Length: 269
Image (cartoon, rainbow, N blue to C red; front, top):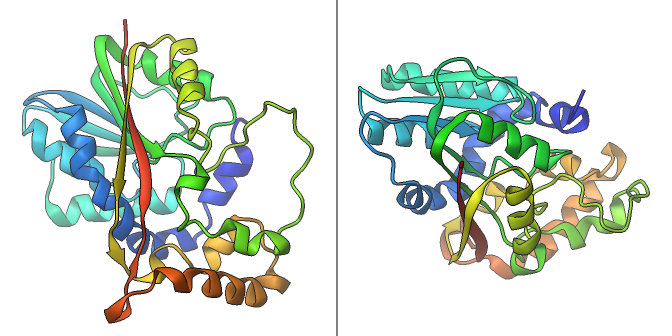
């Protein structure tokens, strides 16, 4: 199956419990994402890689009771978290679907727009994935998503500190970019992917923010495991990561993380 390794990684049951910590960082992006999407009353929107569903709920408030939002994600734990939040909020115009956006077909009429908040960087075949997303849009439908700028623009991501504890990756072709948080960091490459997937009028807007959040927002054992640190080296990798992260600490038990991301927008012809 496509994305099998990513699907396994994102279905680690720990995702359910740690995800609210992650959102303290990523939720700072939501207002900018929705501003770029400009959802209109009555629209039908697809939220790709919806995670814990908060971005879908925000979009649902914008489209109103006459509109609808479908959140799509291949993590069962995150879909469960999203559904619990939807039920607690009593929101009726959101549905969460378990599926992989690289090939999954979402039932219903075409969408007016598709959005994603850091949920489209984990495809083995990004052209096929974005082509599938495009197939769900009406002619003239909008695609808007946030993804990270390159790793070197995001020093809060501590991979270099734990790299000595991670087994070497398998051999890849020189131009092959594996799925991962920074897979769409190269703006020119990402624009080509969208054009190859059939989108037109591709635009990119870079952004930088400096949220203050607890260090555990981005650093815990699950994050280390996701990077490939084996269980027997977790303790020493954690020590190395904490030493690296100390540069971002401020008063009150918080860390000030400079984050660099970009919002892409495109249109289905």
